[in-house]
Image (spheres, rainbow, N blue to C red):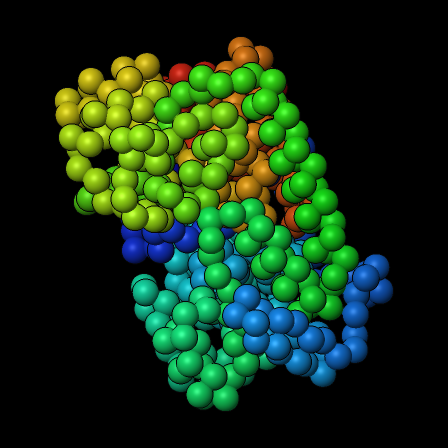
Length: 384
């Protein structure tokens, strides 16, 4: 019989095709069932006409807040759920979004989400127009490239076009757009305020430490071909945010933007001190620790290889839980020897985002405590 960890790895393997440069917890003992829809009369809830301008500059008008949203960019399904504090208005999503829900805790928090249609687009986000039209959406969220939006608009559907520049501003913009569409502008204000507070805190910590942080490489793909985060990626943003440096964007870095293919020799030459393994791939730290090819790399010798957490959505790309990624990365990059505040911060964050309280085992699942257990300084994330 396979172990729970092996089963989880097999599920993650199904997400290998997830978009490279694309994006987007725990609590007291015991779980509680979340409310899947906002309470009537929630402060800031609107009921009249709604108008938004998407990231293409296209103006979309609705007679009332939307109730049926289809999301194609992968992080947007979970972000919509966070803004809405439920999934009752999510009518369809990309399969990779659904896989993350199934494998992470979103499917536990909102089990009905696993019944939402998810065969609506190809791996390169080309929409299945007929499948989407059959869902009768009020609006379809799609990458703003004309060849991706045009088929939907030509079929008579309203399309909210979004872009990904690898910055925190994108998350703020998406959150604001979704909150407006759903008639919950208060949520955008609240979410941004909390994110801004955490961002300033991480920036202050990094400034106090000064320069000289570790070299950190993020692998968007490891098994079946190496891809690392380059210029213009959100991963490069948060590596530098916490005070590290990214060899892939340094003086000996790569040409091109986003996720860039590399060979083993290039990574050996960079000799990163920390390696992050993303959730678009099934690779685990043990795969490097046990492979002779990687034994000369500093991160492997010092056991500083880590699987990135998977919460309501993958923590690798930008999303509503990015503030937790910043704390996690800061703590593994600059361990103090004390217990990390991450569990407490995640408890608070999930309560705010999803109205859900996680058990200690659910938190361990999010943080990959078993897979990361042999990596340096990971005991700081243990339950107290």
